[in-house]
Length: 407
Ligand code: KG4
Ligand code: ZN
Image 1 (cartoon, protein in one colour):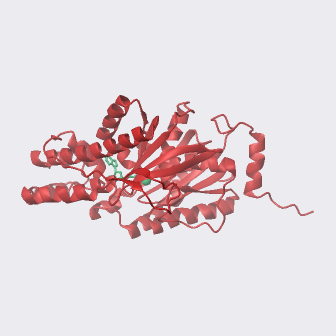
Image 2: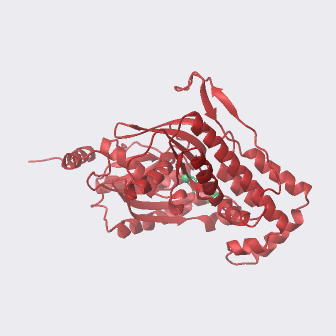
Image 3: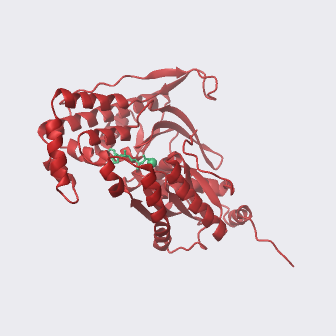
């Protein structure tokens, strides 16, 4: 007699019946394959039960975009298309898994570049259909938050002190979320974001202006250690307001903490003009273009004192602004644990400053490791786990959402 195959949801229910423990780290082994392609990294990873990183493969497109000083969306899509099959295969092989032996496939739905997202989502959909596995759509920003949570659980730490505030600070976002446990999963409430450029975008644009390559964050981080951060003061405006928008479900006089990083980029440009730095920038461009694969040391050798001091002052201003505003919001909301994540969370001065000043306020601050600060798929697989337990699966109609919001 004909017997139909169980649906992915039915299979997961069967799995859950076999694994009675709740989502506290002792649940059985669910192996989730994560796929991420929202910007300029093609990534795949296998994570066990949201708590153990089994394999993690990131193919960076930096070399492709470097000559343009920023991500070129069409090139990003093309590179994702070329890389996605080998990257996923490598992640599965590294985990000793096959399409048959994983339990679910998680993929970034948004936010991100439309064409880039589409490559990962279409591939994950086809894979889920062919291998008959549940598909879980994940918000990239939630992924960054789970990069921290994954590594905490991996260290055996399953309990967080609440309230929890997360600063997601990357090339595309500078967002503050209160994060709460809700049922088996998480709920997020946005209490602030950038009004214009993201902090990482400011690093990238200043680096481009000064001919320091792409992406700007890592090179500025390195060069700033050789300059005087008190050389120039770049003041920041305080943007405080109460949200009176009746459409905001949390409205009612809520204190918001917004950021703005386009002003500092203009201030650096003005500094460059006033101090006649065009010639030194031109010399650096020539010196760097003469090197086949430029290293951080090459950039250092191509910088004069004025440039190093400018870069150090710029970084100091951005770090001070991020830390001061985030800690002020933390105090206001009585936050016990602060999560700082996203590409800019790799910044050494940001980490040092947060660690010192958050400790002074009695707030615990947690970061992802450097490799999970920037885009990766482990964070996507980890964020998918509570949804896997809840049976929250995407349908065949799921589409990518370039402007997807969190909370
Ligand atoms: O999270 P991510 O890989 O991609 C987005 O979701 O945007 O973040 C990339 C951003 C880039 O703007 C890059 O310049 C910045 O993170 N970044 C850094 C550092 N490493 C990467 N910014 C400051 N310091 C760093 N060490
Ligand atoms: Zn990101």
